[in-house]
Amino acid sequence: MSTPVAPGERRIIFLLASVTFINILDFMMVMPLGPDFAGELGIPTSKLGIIGGSYTAAAAVAGLIGALFLDRFDRRSALAVAMLGLVTGTALGGFSRGLGTLLGARVLAGMFGGPASAIGLSILADVVPPQRRGKAMGAVMGAFAAASVLGVPAGLELGRLGGWRLPFFAVAALGLVVAASAIVLMPRMRGHLDRASGPAIARGLGAFVTDPTVILSLASTGVVFLGGFAVIPNLSAYLQQNLGYPRAGLGVLYLAGGIVSFAAMRVGGALVDRRGPVAVTTFGSVLMMAVLASGFLPARPLVPVMVVFVGFMLANSVRAVALNTLSSKVPFPAERARFMSAQSAAQNVAAAMGAVVSSLLLSELPDKKLAGMPAVAAFAMSLAAAVPVLVWAVATRVRKREGQAVPNAPGAAAG
Image 1 (cartoon, rainbow, N blue to C red):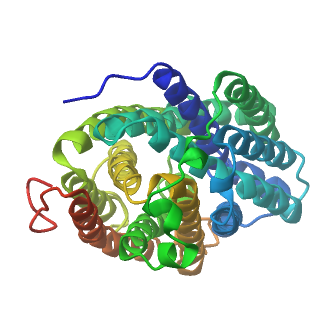
Image 2 (image 1 turned 45 degrees about the horizontal axis):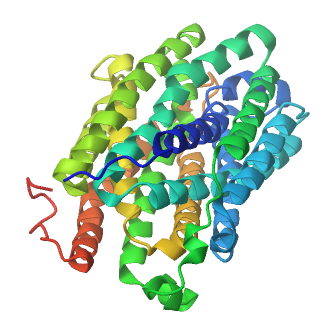
């Protein structure tokens, strides 16, 4: 039986979704704007992945450091500091004068953006009981899709009308409003500090980092982000320069992908609550492999560009909500921020590695086209095939700990 919704729970979920929207938009808008600022700042388009990688590398380092101390603070206060740092880094990006200053601004944004995401997911796990967590996770992660539906197209249009710097300033201003709202409207979050007993308190850092369930969960996250971010930083340049997709149509492309992803997050979260994360992750991984095989292995896609892009967004969204819902059940309550921070570090290390791998596999031809995209796609496909097995291993251990039934195989229909 579903537990009743606690007073204020919906408000907190909305605030967390708003924080996630700013965090994701701050990261997502940079890659589509890449061809716009590359010319002015003298950055080769084949190296745009390094811009994204600088953010994720900084977020990874911050995540590792944050894992040591974030659980010692009130969640609201920690979230406020992280959001203000993110807003500052984003605003500085708009003042960039070259590759060095842009990298510095993105590093600062990443140092605070990674912990902001970890703290937000910790608050959600603190507030929402496990039996409703998939649906709540889908609602919060729906902000990812909303960033595509509303934010990225708006950012691209602002960049077209007012130059590539304007989206940075606009996101920073919006982020400041969201940060202030979270500080004013969110209650103090000290429940994890008030627990005086239980395995979470007794378990030290050494036991935490050697827990096989924690290791497998972080590995699952890393594999998903490694494969995804080998492709994502290069999507805009590849679609425009190799496939001839018009710059003016990018907003429509992200709008369509975002609408589908938003629906997938909401439906996927509910399906995770009913069917379990393994079945949902398996579906998303199979879809991802099909999209990569049809859209990036041939010289020309076997299906329209819109189908390739929407399918890629859909597969990523489905896997993300399933994986994050399962991951929220891995840590004990008093170590959630530690775990989520470590997970943020794993995400960002893997994303940075994906960007580096793609930059090594890709090269820019004299006509500005990217060479090597089939190799990038094949790399991402091989990782996608491993995701359901890793998720099954994590789900098995979590269910054993909770005393629930365990599925028999990664491909089990019941998930």
